[in-house]
Image (cartoon, rainbow, N blue to C red; front, side, top):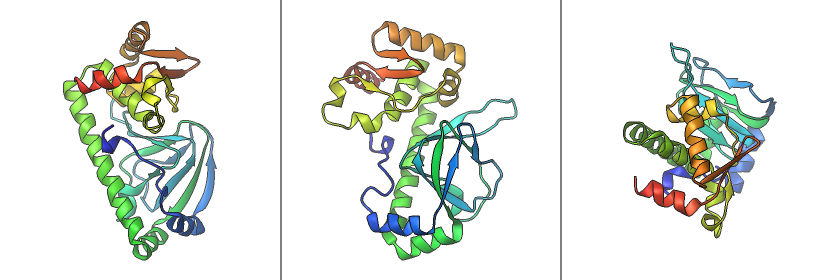
Length: 228
């Protein structure tokens, strides 16, 4: 799997830095569908997603809402603007009930000065996400909807797919998305996504049940994506 498609827990190998972060963080719980921040809000905080899933999205003048990122448990978000305290370019909305730890800009800057490993991790994460965005633009230009959907499902399942022997067995996509949300992530429309998912299920590549998607043959999907 490409290096930029998988993010471990932000603090996976930094227990000291995590303790320092948590010591100045404020724990907040959000219901499904709640906004953690809105476009044009001041970027004076960053967030560690302890539990749940969050979409980073924008509202266009035509009423569409493209989803730029999907953040999962263990990931940081709100980083891009917090360094300079600029206004948000996107909104963050919960896809499920979430628990986040919020740190204010001044406290975060103090943490970066005191822990250089934390600063390096922030740079690594932002670079990874920039590479991901570049790939998404390329996907929109050269890939069909089927490929874009499979790439997204593979990305969302990255943590599970890195487990031993995972490519040889069915893997459930851990983040539940509606067809409208899948369309917003892949630059498509709900009808096309629905038809594409039905086709992939008929081919035996995925299984849909109770708003969950399972990748039935991950190796075949991987080979298919590599051929694109």
